[in-house]
Amino acid sequence: MQFNLDRPSPGSYVYYHITSANRTAIGSHVMQFVQHKLVKLQVLERDDEELVLEYTLTAQQMQGTIQIHEWAADMDELQSPLVLVLDNNGRLKDIRNFATLHQRWTDFFAARMQKKYKHLKESADNMIAETGKLLKDKQRFMQAFEGYSAWRFFFQDNYAEKKPREIKPYVLRQYFGTVDLTLQLESRWEEEYALHHHRYSLVNNATLDTTQFDRKAFARMLKDLTGVFNISAALEVAMEENFHYNAGHWLTQAELFLETKVSDWYSITAAHTLAQVPEKETLQPEKLFQAEAAA
Image (cartoon, one colour):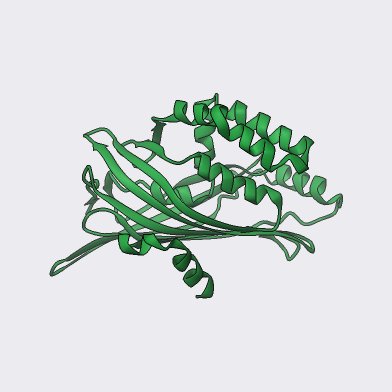
C-alpha cells in the first residue's frame, strides 16, 4: 500500500504560527530562547518537477538569554521574503531570490546591523563580515536550512509516493560543533477518509545510529568543552516528530522535538510547533504570541 500526496495549488496560501524553543545546558550554565513567528506560505508555481513557494515573515517575537539570539531574529527579518524551490521529494532545491538577499544586505541591512550592535565592537564586526561572505555563497547559505530548525516543517518528503513505514538514515551535519549526529529515522504515514474529511499524518521517531556515530570525536569535543578528561561520553537521544496535512495538502499542525544529553551535565533540547491560523487572526499577532506563552 502506498500513499500519494499531491501538491498545494498555485495561488493558494496559508498562515502559520511557529514557536521555536531551544535550551542548551553545560553544567550549571544555561542558554535558551523562545521565538514566535507568524509566516505566510504561498504557492507561486507547480509543475511535474518542482514546487515554488514564497515564504514571508509577517511578525516575530524573540526572547533569548544571549545577544546571538537577537541577531538570529534579525537574520530572519533579512531573509523575508524567500522564494523556495522544492523538488519532487519535498527537499529544498534552490532559493530563487538569493541575489536579492545579498543586494538587501549591501544596500542597507549591513549598515543597520553595524549601528545596532556597535556596543559589541569586534564580535559585531566579525558577524557582519561572516554574513557578508555567506550571502555570496548560495550553496553554503542553503546548508543552513538543513539543521534542526523550524525550516524542517516545510522540507518533508511529502510529495512522492509513500510507504506506510520506512526506516532510513538521517544525519544532522556538525550538530555538535564539528561532530555529526547520526540517526536512524523511522517514518510512518497514515491517511484518514471520512465524509467531507481527508487528511494525512506522518510520525517520525529516531534513535542514535551507534555504528556511524563518531564517539571518539564526540568525547574529544566534550573534553575540550569542559577541560575534564575522564568524563562520560555516553550520548542519549530522544526524537519525535508529528505532521498533519489536510485535503489541500497543507500542513495544519506539526511538532518537532529533539533532545540529546550526556548524563545530567550536558544537554541540547530543541522543540518547534506549528499551527495553521485563520487570516483574520494574523491582524493581531501579539495576541497569538501571548496566548501561546500563557498556555
